[in-house]
Image (cartoon, rainbow, N blue to C red; front, side):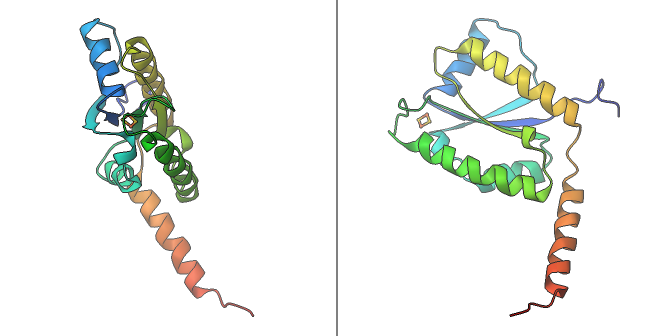
Length: 157
Ligand code: FES
């Protein structure tokens, strides 16, 4: 399938207090943005365990967006700071697995930023469209080979 006809599947984890409300505002304001993102409402972006992201990619998503309140605005004070830390580590791990950086994004979108929500969805959709479909089986196979090679290496002390 060429990139012009490829429709990316993107999973979005949206915090209930800011980003989900921002997405709702974009909808009620009739802003236009691609329909490629499936939103999943979570109580806080800090609820998004990195395994949720891995599971979404494994189950067929080509990209994942995590969206939460701006720093300092988290309903639970510091949930989004935890998210930022986990996201940074997750990006390093995904890169080592061979998953391109643009497939998983973290954005801060407030309840009043319907326009930002529409822009963020457009941007990630276009970025993932350019990257093409995620070959998760290829990622798994490559990781298995690397692990096997490491196991075969003799450790010199
Ligand atoms: S409640 Fe929105 S990021 Fe924590």
